[in-house]
Amino acid sequence: MDPCARDEQHRRVYCVNNAGKRAAPRMCNAVQAPPNKRPCDISKCPYEWVPGPWNTCSKTCGKGTQFRFVECRVKTPNTTKYSEPAVPKEKCEALAMPIEAQECDLNACESEFQWQIGPWGPVCD
Image 1 (tube, rainbow, N blue to C red):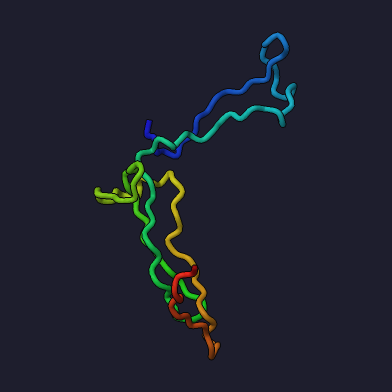
Image 2 (image 1 turned 90 degrees about the vertical axis):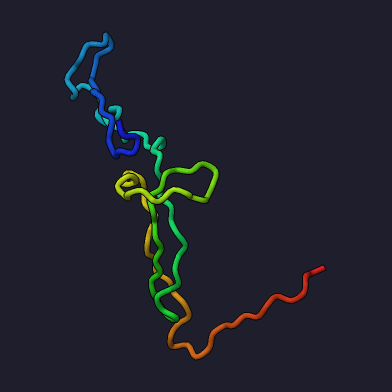
């Protein structure tokens, strides 16, 4: 079984009487029926999505868009450095992928004024 597959486990669920004999489903409370399927555990998937840094906003003022690369990589425990090359994105398709684009909203374009910052002063005592 592929530990990264977006599969489901299935089971049969029956309505039974107090003696354990099968009964018609209408005899049991449908609201209380246990689930007959569940998603497979993908926590053992050896791959993970690794997002890169956001690039600069596409606009210098107003609403723009910024992008980043998101790669599928072999999980590397306790590190943020990846020495191996990225793997095909299909290996991570069962995992929730981080967004690759987002809106950025800089100073309003029609504004004649904007904030400018200087360096911090000496260290506080």
